[in-house]
Image (tube, rainbow, N blue to C red; front, side, top):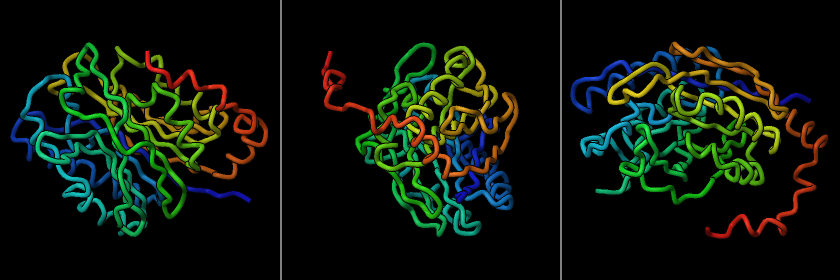
Length: 288
């Protein structure tokens, strides 16, 4: 018997580059709201937004002013969007810049259930600091909540944020803990990772017998001036096949009907979880 869940991803460009932090955040939130409502009207049951959805990808520069854009989780953004989750009976994954306390900030994704209640959060585990323009260690403390699985109204979901996708251990942990759909909100540019975008996550979907939704923002924005965010958000099924994919150059809502029954079918065929040998993998945990 089919178990269909309608899922959505939103990729969006940043509409405002000048002004106060509050004005920049508000412009991005207001841009998202019509797209969120569109998803709700189309019957989307689980919706994921892009990495730090309420602002630009500010990690292209190292400036303490951006600390002022962080907020508690749960907090203003999650409370505001919970109204739309409840209105449309839609689970929402809301990636934000989190302030845990003065001087301690995380790259975080909050989860709101279909009744509008806050379920919990995932904090980005792996923090890059690489040229050009990914100076994330200046802004984010490495996540300390592990890889939580959220049992929502429609499916068990897991999250890994942007750079986390380059570390396959996270997807494996989430799948072993029961996650059926994994979401990867990102901000990644053409010059750095385009060739990996449709390589890594289809492979992880196959290796773990899960669906994955990968989200990337679009366009050019300040303070990033090293390249273009190429969008191309997509859903991939447990066989590694792309179900649907967005364009590379425009704001877009991506919607896919996901049949969770396919997970059992694929896992019964490949039996990767039956045949894995964790007792033989101890070396992977050794420090270099």
